[in-house]
Amino acid sequence: MSIVENYHGDESDDDKEKKEILQRMECFNRLFVVASSFVQLYYEKYILKQPCMDSKQTGETWIREVLDGHKSCCMINFRMSKMVFTSLLRVLETRYNLQTSRNISSTEMLGIFLYILGTGAKVSQCRERFQRSGSTISRHFAIVLEKVSRMATDLIAPEDPFFSSIPEQIRNDSRYMPHFKDCIGAIDGTHIAVILPPNEQVPSIGRKGIPTQNVMAVCDFNMCSTFVMAGWEGSAHDTRIFLDAIRDPKYKFPHPPNGKYYLVDSGYPQMKGYLGPYRGQRYHLPDFRRGRPVSGKEKIFNHSHSSLRSVIERTFGF
Image 1 (cartoon, rainbow, N blue to C red):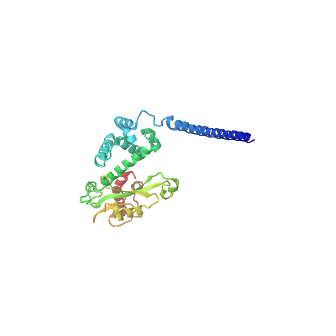
Image 2 (cartoon, one colour):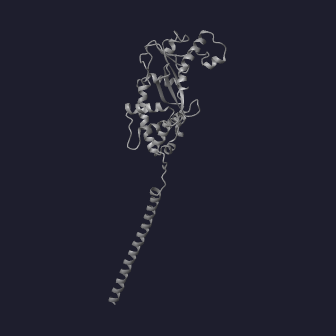
Image 3 (cartoon, rainbow, N blue to C red):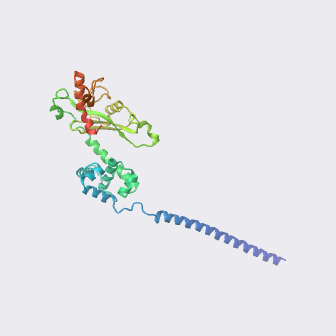
């Protein structure tokens, strides 16, 4: 009896062992199938996929075609002539250390930067145009922006910081000389459209009804920028921006020397060094063209003031 019991016991142990082996094999097979599926998906998505940037015309090639092509092509895509493009590139390379990297030339970096500014192209459009990834486009745009910002700090300043001479445009025009002989430039503001996330748009929506930046600018009578204050929301008043610019030393505003002044419109405060028009009288040049002949000292002054201050409108297109 004990022999039979031992026989059945041994047989039961063998069955259990076989079942365990079969279960392990089944589990392994399931894992193998799952792993094979993941490998296949990875292969199809990352190895077998069709390249997105598959054009034979690289960004470098396209830029070279634009620069070597008709002069209008460069103006349309970069908003400047080939000569200006080449000169700007040379300045950025020699003075502000814009360098060609292992994978992209300084020419293409500047081309990407100017193409985005000049045409308003999105990163997705630039990816196709330059055959580059979105991260590459964004990274090199930021690099050139930093160089151009440093250059702007050096260039946007008065040619003569002491304003020691009378501007030729005033000295040789009887409408302004000698009454405006101490004038050194003009100030005005403009609204530049911006793209913001919906939750950040409200502070930037001003009188234009769209998100903007309110930018204050100063120019001389050679139509050269001498100061630019950017970054304020479109809802900010011109006076607030103006006072912040002239009071905060970090902006390095070119203050008028004693006895000199800038021309401003009625949107700015009347204070020493900043001459505005007579309020309550005609001021803008179109108003004078539509109205009766100019008479009276206040209207005559406003007409001359508006005519001379229009230099900033011609300079920036305000």
